[in-house]
Amino acid sequence: MTARAWAELLRVSALFTVPGDALAGAAASGRRPNGSTVLAVGASLCLYEAGMALNDWADREEDAVDRPHRPIPSGRIAPGAALAAAGALTAAGLGLAARAGRPALAVATGLAATVWAYDLRLKHTPAGPAAMAAARGLDLLLGATATGTGRRTAGPGTGPDPAARGSVLGALPAAGLLGAHTYAVTAVSRHEAHGGSTTAPLAALAAITALGAATLHTRRERREEPGTARGTTAQTERRRAGEPGTALRTRSGRGEDQSRPRPAYRPTAPLALTAPGLVRTALTGSYVRTAAVPLLHAALNPSPPLTQRAVGGGIRAMIPLQAALAARTGAVGTALAVMGLVPIARTLARKVSPT
Image (cartoon, rainbow, N blue to C red):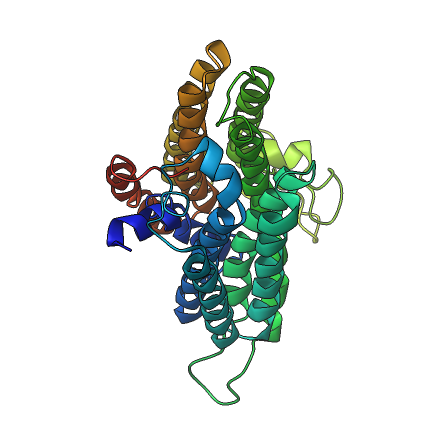
């Protein structure tokens, strides 16, 4: 057993797509990353690697026919060693999650159960892509839960912060988007050994485009109707714009002095033109480009090598997607930190395949 064999078994080049799940979840929870976020990242890494080891253990007979070069069928790693590694990594992941608090442990337990169910039972069933999508969504929610319900480190009465638990709900849309991307990539991966499918890459290409548009979409704040207590009447709008003849009546019935200098009305810049908006747009473009180009090639020529390349592109595209989801909440620093993982993942992908 060599270090390279274990690197291939554990897909170390794909490992760098994992920390962004927890960091995007932390950003979506509305709180800054903290010590519990670090524990969530560690738990995610352990559970992901457990899934990789368990995947090859469960597929050892199939790989002996279709992928004899993999570590287990080639004899470089014993099946028992891979299974033991999966169990140990699962225990380590749950242990780290437990240190982040009971809510984080609950999410991590659901994630671990999903990973084992997928590898041992659901992978070759119609529920396989949905199970993989659920695993990625839970991984993001693990980061949000650990961050939002982390323990206070200052002040009296340390313990779980009940007020922060509601912020986890804010991570559900981001988890849904990441899960949808995972579903599309997993559906394509079912054909990477034999190729021959144009439908799966085309469907994934359409999904990537829709997800890119959804990532750019920002929910507008609801505007009060004119005439309500918080509403804005047309007269008020003209008054703010500084138009003449629009003095507002005070409660005493007197008009305001129009001779007073008033600040000029300056409309708020669209979000897309702000710094966070520009960063999010750039990251979303990187996500779509990374995933869409190899998918288009696989759709035009559904050979096994191009299909496998499309799956690899979809895996690498998770990093800019995670970064875009973080930037979507205004966490530009977190988004840029996640994007810093791209060069590492690209370099390792040249040495160890992520699929």
